[in-house]
Amino acid sequence: MAVQISPSILAADFARLADEAAAVPNADWLHVDVMDYHFVPNLTLGLPVVEALRKATATPLDCHLMIDDPDRWAPQYAEAGAGSVTIHAEAAKAPIRTLREIRSLGARAGLALSPATAVEPYEDLLGEIDMLLLMTVEPGFGGQKFLDVVLPKVRRARELIGRHGGTVWLQVDGGVDAGTIERCAEAGADVFVAGSAVYGASDPVAAIDALRAAANRAIS
Ligand SMILES: O=C(CO)[C@@H](O)[C@H](O)COP(=O)(O)O
Ligand SMILES: [Co+2]
Image 1 (spheres, rainbow, N blue to C red):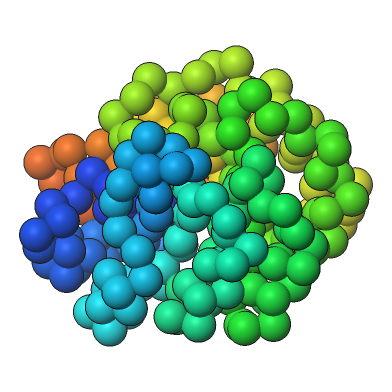
Image 2: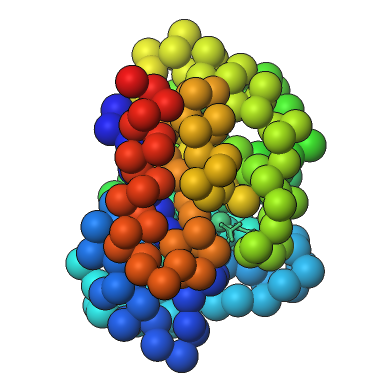
């Protein structure tokens, strides 16, 4: 699959979200980090902002739900027009039902694993998802240092996905920048979230191009 870059608007200016979305026309997705002060110790945005952003940009929204009770809320993000809705395995009580509901509403279904959560127990769910998100920082904040310790899990996940037909996208999120993206790509990731590395750059378009080129170099 072609490399995809999903800039995280967590690092953008929340007062100018429509402009910030327009500032990255070469992005494949816009990564929207939803946090609720419960699953993670931070609060960001919710459904009203996703609905507004959806109308303000043609770039599909990649909603990463870092919230308690995603079984209750995730379908509403699909209804709000998100192109992809990712729930955390650590928070979901009925992940299969919720993932199926997301898909039935026309969105791609994603499952996220925090750094200390092993991938093997979720192998049987690969048929239920369109994307596996492996967190490469502890969820909750942008601008954290990339955790190399997750890279072996990225490799294992790529192997498991390969055994299951290879259609599931493998996303990494957290501390992804020009210095770390090559190792993620070599390990098998194909969708890259980058917050600070894109919105912290003086030229976000050039930053996305550079990240994409680095990932492509690593796998060529
Ligand atoms: O989900 C999260 C953090 O919990 C991420 O999406 C961050 O927003 C990525 O930001 P950088 O680490 O790239 O600055
Ligand atoms: Co995220």
